[in-house]
Structures are given as structure tokens and as C-alpha cells.
Amino acid sequence: NLNGGIRTVTVNNGTTGVRTTTVGGIISNGGLAVLATGTGAAKTSLILTGANAYADGSTVNANATLATSTTGTFGTGDVTVADTGKLTLGNATSFFDSAKLTFASTSTASSISLNFTGTDTLGAVYDSISSTYLASGTYTASQLNSYFSSSVFTGTGSLMVAAIPESSTCAAIFGALALGAVVIARRRRA
Image 1: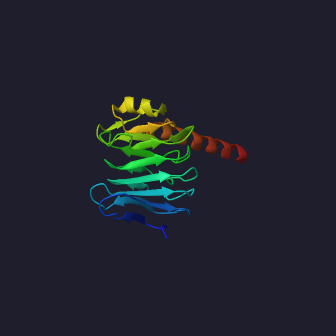
Image 2: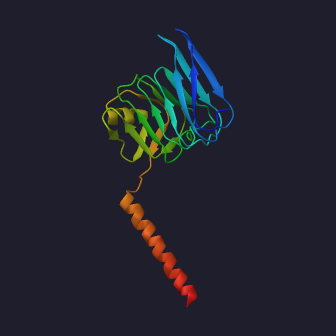
Image 3: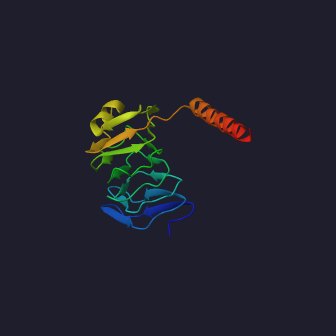
């Protein structure tokens, strides 16, 4: 059972090869960390096939791969990919719309694969090496690589970074809504 708390999936695969694990059920709370404990060419691969709802995020460590199938998602939290970790998106709804993807632009070439057709929306893309956020807009893999001066992204899909309002804008919107509610309440009393 992967529900509750931060769940760590660790596969020790010796010194060579790839050990792949598929999670077909739905992970509904907590978070997920994917670790590889093998040495040398050993790799760990975890494939998510469920419409997951865990909120505490996903972390992909060195020599590990986290992937979604054509139906899987990374839950509602942020996704962090360590240097030499890999991430594969198998569909255009892998990320939650407000999730942040953090990666290292010095990571292995083609370590983040947009292996789907269409556009996946997310809240932010952050390069931990240059401390750079991707500007809002829609980007192909080659445009992402150009933006971050890297070769990390590959695949045919696109990522769309939604414009997130500044906190002062959110406060102004909330204040306007609250004022409107007060005006309506006073009119009903009159």
C-alpha cells in the first residue's frame, strides 16, 4: 500500500540492467520518492498507470526513472528530478495544472521525455542549476532546451506554463470579492 506519508520505492538491481515496477492502483495521499540503490549501470524505473491524487509531490533520484503511462499522473504535487534522474510523461495530463517541475539543466541529455501528443499544463518549470523559472507560455522540447541552454528535454509533446498571479494580485482579487459580498449582503437587508 503506497497511501499515507512519503512512500519511497527503492529497487536494488545489483550492477547492471533496469528493474521496472508498475503501480496500477491509485496513490491517494502522501508523496512518492523513487530511489535507485544499484551501482554502475543499474537503473530503477517506476511507471504510474493510475489517476493519482497524492499531494506531497514526487522526487526522482539519481539513476532512477519515474514515468506515467497513457493514463497515469504524478498526483497533485510538485515533481523534482535529480541530476541523472529521468522523467517520462506518457500523456498530456501527467502534471497537475499548478504543479512545479524542478530539474537540473546539467542532467543527462534527454532525461525528461515529453512522450505524448498534445500539451500538458503545469504551474512552473524551474532549473535548479541556474535558479531560472520558465516564463509563461507553451514550449516544445527544443524550445525548452533553447530556453535553458541544455539538452535535457526530448519528445513530441509540449509543456504550457500557466501565468500564476502575483500574491498582491491575488490579495486584490480576494479583497474585491469580499467587498462585493458585503455590498450584496447589505442590499438584501435593505
